[in-house]
Image 1 (tube, rainbow, N blue to C red):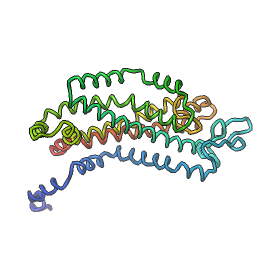
Image 2: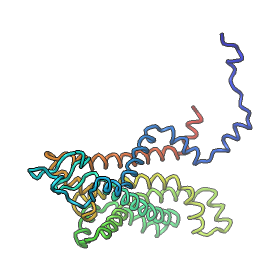
Image 3: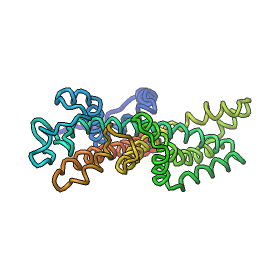
Image 4: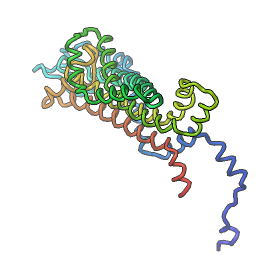
Amino acid sequence: MTSLSELEPEIVPPDAVEARVRGRSPLQLAWARFRDDKVALAFLVILALIVVFALLAPLWASWTGHPYSATFPKTGLDVNGQPVGPSRDFWLGADQLGRDVLVRAAYGARISLLVGIAAAALASVVGVLVGTLAGYIGGASDAVLARLMDITLALPYLLIAITLAVTFQVQSVAASLTMTIAVIAFFSFAATGRIIRGQVMSIKQKEFIEAARSLGAGRWRIMFVDVLPNLVAQITVLSSLLIPTSIVFESTLSFLGVGVRPPMPSWGAMLGEGSEVFQTAWWLLVVPAVLLLLTTLSFNLLGDAIRDAMDPRGDRQSGGK
């Protein structure tokens, strides 16, 4: 039978509770909340596997003996000239030219991740700078920068991107990659800038900003020392959500033939090639489609999880339970 002493609640000394609370930084609290999200952790593992898959692209080519641009018509095509399906020689099948789909998918992952992360980083930097300047300075500067962001959001980005690609006719892989990143960043910064602008307009009314002004702090010091550090959580979330958007944008351009130039493989270009022979070679469409879906879904879910983990209101909600 249970004794009364066993039913008594455990009494934790107040100083121990205070030590526990003081010993956890906001980053530690956010990480603790993130670890509780099992779905986010699962997709974090999936994303890590995709990153490893991309990093090992040269190793896949070495193991299979199939460089990403090399064609193997004797082993990659059957007697009717059709691509062979998954086999011991071609683990994920071959394409219409006898190229290894596994190797090309791995190199395509490199392109998608590179473009997604680089374009998101560039768009975040520009968006944060423009949004901070517009929100803090105000007046005519705010009016001009706010209208610039509105116009950018209203532009038919896909049509303009196609027009630029056709006009400049870049031939090298490096030039087409740089242009793709620049175009995606240009059409992505405005969404981040508008959100940061609103946050800055709210923060600049806070008492600690008024205190900094009264102590003689300059405009630039307040913006970059006092305001921006308070937006780290929002910037992190916005940047993480820009990555899947940039990946889809790049895949769309490559699907239409105006993205990264051949012979460098891209998931979008592989989707375009696979859609032409889907009925006879389903793997050409399924492989890049599944990889693209898993990558974008992982980044989106991780972005949502980061947002929830870094939301200070989570502390109050957890404390009330």
